[in-house]
Structures are given as C-alpha cells and as structure tokens.
Length: 204
Image: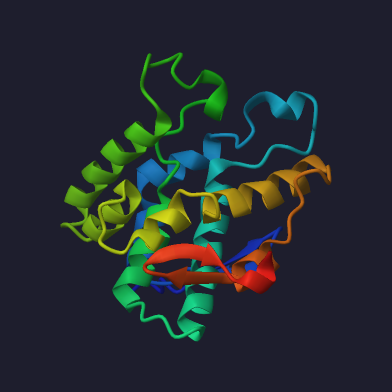
C-alpha cells in the first residue's frame, strides 16, 4: 500500500506535510499536475530571472497556510471538524486549477469572457465525479455556498491564504521587498466573529 503521508521541502516555508490520503490523490491528478508547467508570474521572468516558480508551488503553499490558519482558529476555541479542515485545504489547493499558459497574461484572450475562477470550478466539478463526491464540501466553500462564510473568506477574501502566499512567494522569487508581509503574524491574529473572518484588535 502506497505511503501517502508525504512531506515537501518548500523554499519559502520549509517542510510542508500532505495532510491526508485524499489530498495526496488530488495532488497526483493530471489536472493539478499540469500546474507544474504554469508560471506563477507569467512573463515576469524576463525582468526578474528568479521568477520561475509555478502555480503548483503556490497552490501547495496556500494549502499549507490554510492549515496553519485553521489550527490558530481551533486554538481560540472555534470548532472546526477534520472534514472542514480537509475540505478548505482542498478548496485552496484547487483554486487556481483553471489558469492557462502565462497565468493572467493570456486570461480571457484564449477564451473570451472566461475567467480562470470559472474554469477552476468546472475542473473541480469534473474531479469531484472522479473522486465520487469527496470534493463536494470543498466546492461549496470555494463557491461561497457553505453555511460558514469564513471558510470562503479564507479562500477568497481580503485576508485569504491565496494572497498571503503569493505576496510572500512572489517577493521571495523576484528578490524584491515591496510585497513582503508578516504572514505569520497576520495568521496568528485571525479570529472569527458571527462566522465572519476578522482580525483581533491588537493585530491592527
């Protein structure tokens, strides 16, 4: 039986853990593996030679930060089930699935009036069939239809883990400091009030 409890050495965060066998299988799926070939910053490598990182790396980093954020919220007394944690990590893992070549550079050029978010959702639905419905909760969180809104806000919002990762990762690989943010501190200051994601007063 294959060992699916893997660790990945990420240049930004160090060792990342694949949290479950389902997440491992999703990462192995061809739809996700293609992100290895999609550059995170499109043509920016022509100006910043180090900017050759991929959407694959970014998605793994965002998944890691989602786990960190949910562990912080749990430590503050919020009840988050293991299924909810896994589903939210799957949702952020797959949030960029619909990106095409050169990421944002060719978005809506290859397919007019079609966003990568819409394409991501279609691919997630297709994968959900292949995984016998195991991605249903992740899709609801991605769409914003899950009854606890803070999960969607962690995936797509002003304090989402997508943004937390790309600001830190893009700064790292380009060698610039303008996008450097205190991701660890921001995550430590996250709180939930009335099922909405907020920042503690002392974090402002």
